[in-house]
Length: 131
Image (cartoon, rainbow, N blue to C red):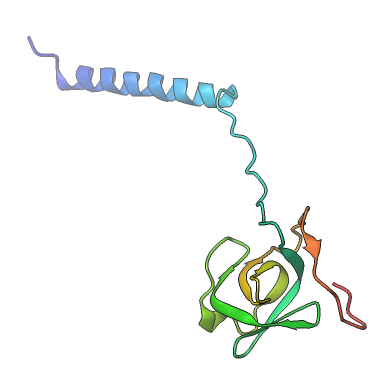
């Protein structure tokens, strides 16, 4: 004998309610706690400072001009790649890496309040602006 549709539907809804209650109860009890995301680790030899990309593109960090190398990679504060056409006017705190010839080949733009530990500061030649 088949169960009528309303009673079968009630059983399914009751089972779904129990499963949902268990799931919410486990999360509320703190059964699955994720650790905080680790801080970004920058390569040895990286420098930090206030970067300003000009037209061309060109790069100044703490009022010192740096040549850009081929294959330049720039990541914004959300770790997305910035295209070369979008570099002009980009500015803010940054960490950058140079190759053996002194060309900048990697730049990580930072969020305005983000602090960086373990990275040396780039030379500063600004007279009145201290970054």
